[in-house]
Length: 158
Image (cartoon, rainbow, N blue to C red; front, side, top):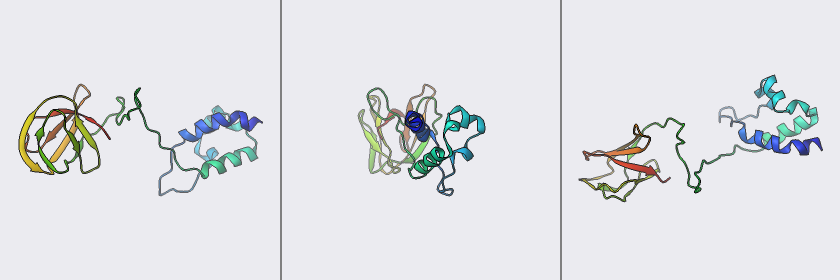
């Protein structure tokens, strides 16, 4: 009965437990991963040895959970504003001749970015040009492509 009452807490805890690296693929029991203060603060000290053993067995048999951050509309948020995002470098797949005001650009790393403004910029046509996308001072993303003398604002699609 006590285990049933603690199930929501245990599930929340299980989702918050960081995944172990591939090098350390063995499961480490909760009591060894937490300080005594953390163990007590979560209420796990109230479990019997058998209940704790069962919880550890359950956690060791379930892989990590990946949680996506989404906005109010349910669209994925790739870089929460509190996170410092590094510039993205790669190559635009295929032919590039400039920014049309509504273009989508697939990079060689699989990311897809679309133009966030209506700016039209003609550039020399090139195949698979180098691209750099970096955050501006105002928090939006600016895309520059080799062969173009200007940048445009973009948002990540996937």
